[in-house]
Structures are given as structure tokens and as C-alpha cells.
Length: 107
Length: 114
Image (tube, rainbow over all chains, first blue to last red; front, top):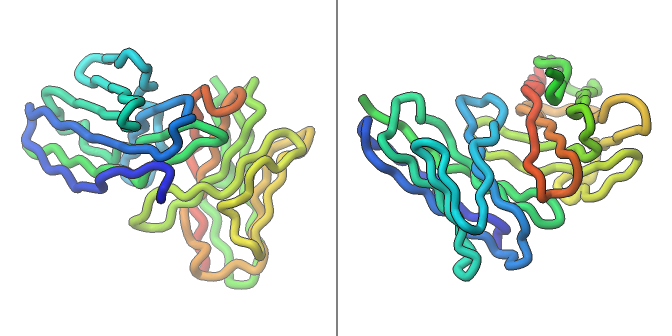
């Protein structure tokens, strides 16, 4: 079983839509959780850390469910510039990356 | 504002040559990670190093690939006798300590094998 699993998509949504990604992890002892964004073969960039109580940054909301071992990312009011691949990352003994979920926001 | 520095940005090698990829972590970071991304695929973990120690190399191919992070100087990912299948983007990331802090990535090295 993979350490981290994500739905690869692609997700194609119209501008202004709300879209949610989930990511499951296998190690219940995992300690830290992050969402990264990767554009067009560039380097991954940290989007946000995910805290147990859930956290919000503008249009982005991240949540952690330890009991079910998944994290989620919600994007409200999608913009064209949100088009990217979103990577779920789980930290334990090392960092484990999901394969990424592709999002395309359509005009 | 020195982030993670990787060089070269692009590297072209012929089959059979050696490729050396360098990574200088962010100031204050002592943990370095190397990843490979093949065309149209996700990031694949290769190796995790601290100064002078390889912590986890479970993602490294058993042959031709090696990595080091010496006491002084950058981390080096070395690929000997390169083959066409080694063509990929190689990303380095660093973090200040173990995995409770996020990683920060360099711009990557695009390796092309002729």
C-alpha cells in the first residue's frame, strides 16, 4: 500500500467554482501534513501546512482527519491561475509525496 | 534571500558520461532530499541526507547513482554512465530539521541524455 494516495484527476472546473481534493495516508503515526502546488514542470512550492484544527488562507481551506487518515484541500471561487498540480505531503520518518491532482480552471 | 540553490539548471550529457548535480540547502537547513520527476510523472523520492550521513536511500537505483552531503559544500547527486532513461528533472529540497517542518525546493536540474 502506498504511503500517500491521491486521485490524479484531472479536475476541470469553471472559473468561480469550488473544488475539493482529498488525500489519504497509511501511517497513523504521521506527524505533519502539507499541500504543495506544482506548475508546469517547475519546482513544487509550499501552499499551506495542515493543522489538526483545520486552517484557512484566503480562498484555500485545509483540513485533517486523523481518525480516517485523510487530509483535504478546498479551493473556493476558482481562478484561472489556480490551474496546477496539487501535491499532498505527509511527514513521518521522512516526507511522503502523493502523485498529485491536476486542476484546470476553465474560463 | 538565498533559497535552495541547484546547479546547473540544465545539463546535457551523452550516453556513458557522468552527471553531477549540486544542491546548496537554505541557510540553517541541515536536511537535504533529492527527488526525480520523469516526463508526465509525479515526484519520486530518491534519497534523504544530513551532513555526512545518508539517512534513507530507499529510492535510489542500486547502480550508477550515488549521493553525498559533505561537512563543507553542497550536496552532490552523481549519476555514472548515464542512459537515456536518466533524462528527467531532478529536484533538491531542504528542511531545517526532520519532517515536522516543510521542505523548500530548488528550481531543479533538467538532465537531458543524448
